[in-house]
Image (cartoon, rainbow, N blue to C red; front, side):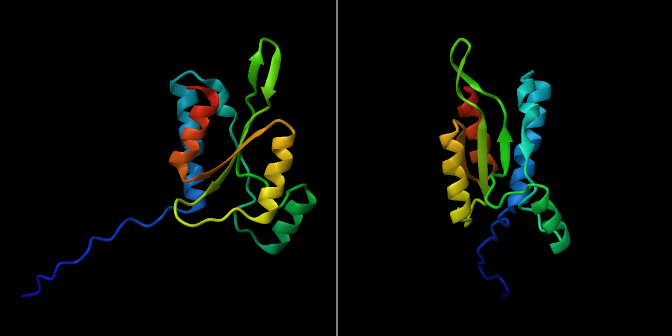
Length: 138
């Protein structure tokens, strides 16, 4: 009769770029509408964007570092008045499904943590937004 039961397809897993864009959009909107201007400082690294080899070489010569985290929020947290215990939040963003932290990324994360930065590896935009909320105590 042509009435076979088929399993509905789940939506495709967003790319890392789409996830990062969602986090940046959320930060910009929250900064504008909730009055938390510091969120407007979130900075995205473009190292995950596929570019022609010539452009990649130029980026490397200009200081791009393999393994650098995808996002940075340069908002320090005070432990006591006038004393900072955390310099900012780095986020390594991965797709919701799959995505592995590379050896280079692990090394960079270790070095950043040793300098007083918080580094979070997040699977998907929702996890990254939650990490920002937790970090800022929103």
